[in-house]
Image: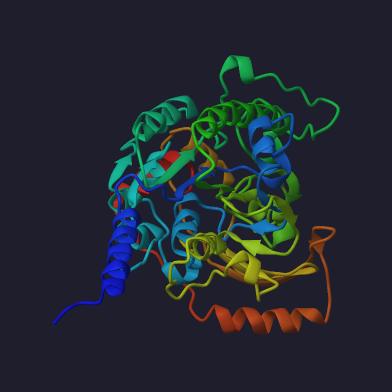
Length: 429
């Protein structure tokens, strides 16, 4: 049977199009996610972070983005799965992604090469999620080294998903000398750590100055990375959680202690959960978005940009948001608190022991201490988020019902000895 000439022509065109579509040299939208550890939303500025600030002007900037948990490993699992911590239940450093669908699981079959460069041993549990993982078994490293390693990997790389994590603003704060330049004598609190029962000689203000120096140093290295990325790249910058600098007292969150709150992990005040989050992507116009979004929204949003089918997740595509609230919780290993927050109110249910702040800070400095768990006391709290203080309102009943519908179980954590040592060295227990 003879094939009509016109059909032969059509088949030839189809074959040509397919060969072009599948050619090795095709330009793909690459993906880079930069996570900046422990950076508060209100510490991103033209002075403190000029490179991030410049990037923000080319991006979709979310002014009301919230972290799911003020702890590094579970926060990152939420970012990479789109699932709330109370549902993925990954709370300690050696937890891996078994049983979870991560963004790398979805991208690898699509031909993406995946790599992760992290600056702290706290994220070693992510090793199996990447084709190439450059992490640490102990301690932490500076942003300059992490950036240099990532840039070397990027040479002649095509169709990649790259994660670069910076840990510099995490305690203990110790910026390089040329970045230790801030002096806030007339601006920030002179509260001393002695008020917290903590054996440190400097003031909280002096620590905050060094914290900002770490942000400035880290920002310079992020600038090096951004310079190497082209316009065919989806780029995300997000913080995993914030930090307390005596913005509140622990008693304001239901603890018995009345000392100033410092560091992170013990409360769900906005200084611990409100984070910078921005996305730059081909074809998406820069703008500011003021609706409430969550870090769990990042994975579904990236998949939406790529037109890839999405698994079931707690997160939503940011430009298709239905939820007008965010869910956050603390690590359930000792105390546990879970909150639901909208534009006006934050409702919290908590089971609290004492803060053990002296032990936590000592452990962050590498000292051996005995950590004990006390009896938990249940607290129900409501906060006015505009004033960031305790409130009372009939709206609490509605928020409480919403929270109970979402959070059906209080997770528990069993920690192996190695993970416990890692958490101690970094101050999480």
